[in-house]
Image: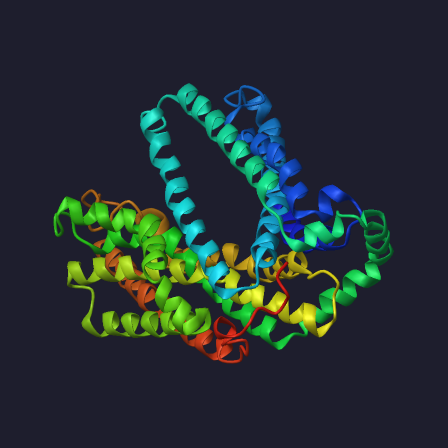
Length: 430
């Protein structure tokens, strides 16, 4: 985990700089980064599903550790490499607000379709009991992902790709090669980090990643503990469990006109106020109303994820601003996205670590199986401890959104590119 944490932290800005400044076509070209990265990513996706030895044999535990390290680092490397190119394409395909919003909508449709893969895997493998079927299914997913990414890399075009790999190919690559140095990497990073709008965005994004990670890891656990068994119909509980996979995408698809009219900045800011007000209201009412708890769970799983899906729009505006301010021949899209990831990724680890530390101080480790809908207490479990733990869960449920939303409202108010949805494109479209 330490090896992975270190590599996970440094590979985003490293790959970002390489993609923006490398003289290698497979790195500098967004299309080619996806074209050549797709088969490797699909291959590395298969690594965890095929054992390298019999891990039930104690003599092979060291090999299981090596397998884990290689899987984590290899998969994350290609995820970062391909995803940075995809994010850069988002910023570079078009600078028109309506085009970028349309891309966001397409992403949400693809996300809804893609999220069905987990449900299908459980059907195919009989809830993971038939491991061979699961392996075959994963191979099918890898092949489908490879085909889709290859199709995208062949058919997508931006004016920057045509400029760099057109008639002036050798001259452009030679110029890029001269820029490729540690000094220029530090200079570009410094320019990005000293951008007030970038600082405002990345701090807000850090808190959002923390919130989304908290929701995805703990809200359903909290629901099992705080909502008594049979207090809600089974259909309502199914909606609660499935809301986080579908509702964020539905919100974006239905709210396209609102986003286009008011802009991503204002929509995201409103989402912080909604989260803050909803959490305060729940705290004042209390945890004794199952329907209200369920409604809050759905809201808190959906609103942050929906707002998070819009973040490519303001980050793309920052890339546009940076290119104009420093008169860049090509925007440093991958570098901006990579630097953003470097700062925000620690929130993925901090959220579960901090929440689990708080819960464990109230006996979560030995009480986690005794939720409101769980089995009756055994003699080793103390009813008073369970009540204290449930009270702690409720306080975390209310005050984490309150604290994060307040912090986001403050830092997001310093963001200056608020009206990009009403301005003309910053570059002349070809």
